[in-house]
Length: 278
Image 1 (cartoon, rainbow, N blue to C red):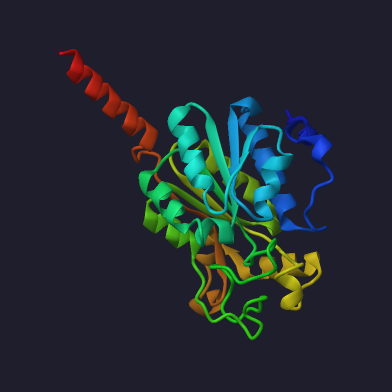
Image 2 (cartoon, rainbow, N blue to C red):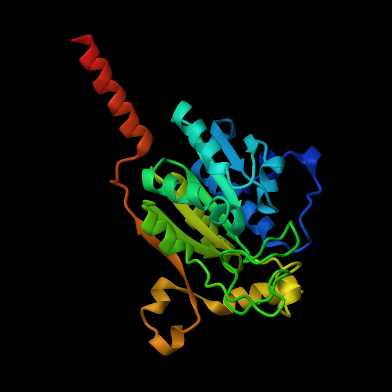
């Protein structure tokens, strides 16, 4: 039997619409994927905490009809960790942009992953600081133009998948807005995972990144993303020369048996209480 259509407005604060994002912004596709994933899991929206920091992406909680928290720049995971420690039975989701998550928020990112706390971190990677004027970010491609790199960026970009894996995240995936169904599946799998999950979503910011790099049209930029991404399954059948300059998408790491942080904390509390009772 086919699933009934998703009532997206059920998950949104309709009184806050229309949203502030530019027409064609990839954040809309990402938010739709998150709502779709939550709906498929059958979660009660009252059991969800949706947390963000600062930036275009971080405005998403303002539109979501859930328990939401719009925090300071780069600190979303700090607040989310506090929520999860106090209410470990709740579902905690963090949504951040590439700058918010990996520049000012980079230290919190690696330590949340190291702890393997049961939080889902969704990073909207549009390669730019979109809200604050188009400065280059830790994921801006080498040679790309930005407001602070008008002659081309010379900083090497972070590989967020490798960063998350190296820091200890127990679920790591990367999707892109040109394949919204696959992106939704990765988000769903990350949400369902017990442990720190990181889903990188490659998205378009045609306003700040695109117009500086000859892709001011959203469709043109999404086509650019589609052209440079290859699934890890397809990549296995390709030659090294064919993969040069490509970005792989898929699930890169999934360890469901790794001890989760709030479980470890609860076990410690039990040990201490048992020792005191003797």
